[in-house]
Picture (tube, one colour):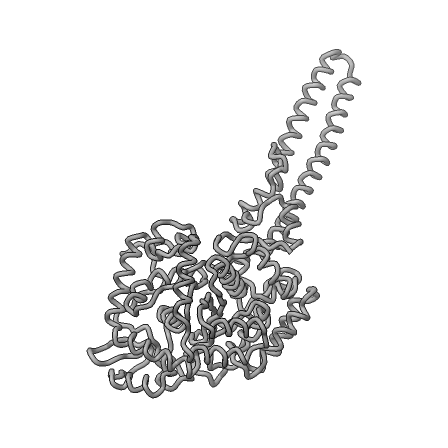
Amino acid sequence: MRLLGRAFSSSYAAGEAAARRFLPLDFRRAADRAARTRAAAAAPPSPAVLEILRAQQVALPPSAARAAALDALARGGAAIVVTGQQAGLFLGPLYGFYKAASAIAVARALERESGVRCVPLFWLQTEDHDFAEIASVTVSTSAGAPVRLTLAAEPSAAPRASVAHRRLGEDVGGLLDALAEALGPAPAAAETIALLARHYRPGRAPGAAFAGAMAELFADEGLLFLDPRSEAVARLAAPLHRRAIGDAVELGRRLEVRRDELAAAGFDEQIATRPGCALSFFHPDGPTGDRFRLTRVAANAWGLSGRDGTLADGALEGALARAPLCFSTSALLRPLLQDSLLPTAAYVGGPAEVSYFAQLAPLYELFGLSPPLVVPRARFRCLDAGDRRRLEQLGIGADDVARPREVALELARRPPTGGPGGRSGPDAQALAVADRDDILARVDKLAAAAAAVDAADRNLGRAAERTRATVARALGRLTDRAARTALARDRTASARLDRLVAALCPGGVPQERAYGWPSLAGRHGPAALKRLVFERLAEAGPFGGDLLDLRP
């Protein structure tokens, strides 16, 4: 049995030598960044690609910066920084927004370093068919509780159809109302809802709604968008699919070799190697129908994973010639399509994407393509005023919130000076009782000593007994009050910690993966949130990889 390895992305982000051998271009080195940017700019996009980009930007909110980016690509000598994401409901998890901002910051940095015009581009991953992955978003209410909003699936849609061919239903209006209720009296709730409502409308494709809202947010930064699920892109992608199907055996062999190399270095492969599978999906019932992974079942025949029947090589070739939109890319083929169409200097990706780029170098070599610089996206954690106040009250740091609950509470119980004490709850009560018994034992000794002064003086003995009883009652009231105070403090600390966990890492999931963009946009404002992100990126730089705190 093969032992599980560690994720490649964490090693790569840390700059470890074990990871660098799989992605030799080092995003930390200015020389590597500049060289890759200049090389990308030397291979401008084709007129057909430029025409596709222009046509797709027309459908977006107007932007002078976006038009200038297109003009720069048309003139030649410009490079592109690409990022991408599934088209999640109401912009999906926060990290999609952070990806876009990271790509813009990386493009700016590469342009400064290389002197080459760099344009940011968001690749909409609309070929994917996992509707459940994009249909929900979780937002944080004004009370700090998470609320999950979910689109209903279209009854008539093919279950495995690319999300590009799905449409938002009438329930999207109700979800906007539910979002408004969840955001409550947040200062920018109305502005956030209005922006989303301009794009998330019944009958619109999820990808178009996502692109419209994101394009409005980043209009001043000139962020371009490309949706690969179109007839025009499919025609340009046909040679890549033809090659991927024809060389499927060799592609599989190279991926298996790479898998073994990664395992020998202690890493898992991000996407499991499937012997005999092409990297292309086929839509046998037409472009809007279900898509299936192609699997070689005989020397001249293909099967469809999850569906009965086979296709001869000739039939598949004929379908590719007649209807190229009946084919779509897998996660491992998508980067190859991207870099066959675009002058990609860098790809900005999350941990999973960084890890699957480690698998791709042998495929880039086979297809005669140059791999891009792979840059981990920036990671953020928003600590608003309430979060910062609760952290200060507990005397813990933001990183402590992700620790096991009892560990975090114990850290909060420490006295501020680091001296003795600081216990609470049952521990404090036990300590107080022990102290009381010790004091009463001393009073008993004093009473016995007083009685021994004059054994015949009964009044002295009675006075000693009354003193002991008075001290016992006073100490009992004091220790009971101390125990109640300690328990109340524990309850208060527990409630504060619960609120922090809900805000920063609900269910152990980082804030940026748990909550959707509206959670922070509604609280701080779309423009203000964007400004906060860019300010932190300017301070820390886009190539650091550390978790960055936003402090509105």
